[in-house]
Length: 86
Length: 445
Image (cartoon, rainbow over all chains, first blue to last red; front, side, top):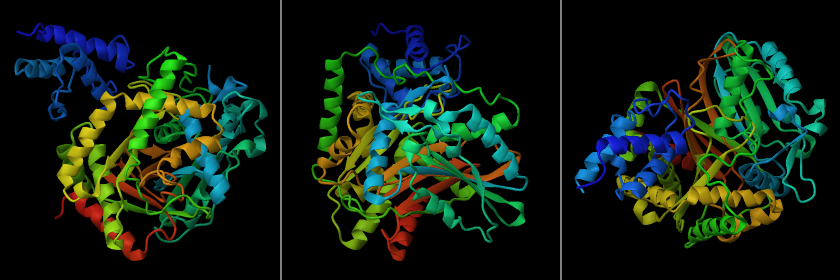
């Protein structure tokens, strides 16, 4: 069983975005819209790399739909589903 | 501290990379590596208002006409302390032109020789059209702005005109910071290792060597022109949906790149030529994500793609290959490595740098230039009170490779600007290029 719960993943995704990839203010939260916050193709691929380093799973880019990239929470849920599938 | 309050401003690595191109074009082709954007404006534009605004802007920001010079072994810099007001960009208003064809003088301006050492960095041309319309071209030495920076400049000009900003208020320059997303604090050895890794990666692109339509660099006058194709809103909607479906929500540029590769391939095939491999650099915007950014700095790296002609026939296989190469290159940290390698251009003599870039592929640099810049100046629908009817980029390309495809969206319409050295393509080849591109963009079998 993976040690990554949806909550832990959300926290990790949020942390990477806030601290490493985006220049965001104090109002940025796990529910903030990622594209509005400046997420682009490069940033999202760098995010996938960081997630792979943390979890060992590479998230297929075909899963990066507008719905999954809505916010850190939805993205973490997508990654968690992928983790569950092994 | 903003650029306007400094005595000098050093160029970034990407600036110097572009400066090496400029040097090559100046020496070999008698012109400059100058980029252009065009605004096609509706009724209500006042050229006098723009001229007055540009005077205020130039007075506040001498970087717009600061000589670019190297001092000793230090990186070249904009010398604001040496800026001469007579070199400041002035608004040139030309006679009224009939019809809707793009003004010839816009092409001529791209082939002009801007003397950077004298601070000749930018030109503004205004052409009145029938029914009160206006075409405006901003042409600048490419090292002054990248594509994103030039759009930000247009938006900033409009915000100053509307009184939303003071003319002295610029986004922060962030001069000393590492490029966004780049590793900080690397030692000299590690930087050398990363730059070498990028150079080795580039060398793999040259086996087999790419072949451009322009051929290896030669001494010939630069004579760039461009064809503009604008797709209507219904076509654009279909193209954008197809791009997302084919290449992904965040990477539609790979779909557009695939269409450009196939359009060039059609010309090669029609000529009965073997291109070796298609090698194309894709500019990557390294500006901070989600914040305002400095205007007068290019912040880009390059991702290189290489595909063999055999794969080009199958569109979806080509897109899949480009996607796989993009992820592999990002995983190998080639974007960061490229930015580090470009930093060396700040210290290397320009000719040495340009020579190194072309040496691996026997005088060729790549197959063609390509850029997809997304929505053009999406923050404004008017410029100085006049509605923006259309807007697009015309990026420069040296005589070799001689061909550049730039794509962007404006007001729900896709613009494709095909910049090419005059005479590079015959009339039939230009038509073939356009038809192939159109068929692939729209998915017409």
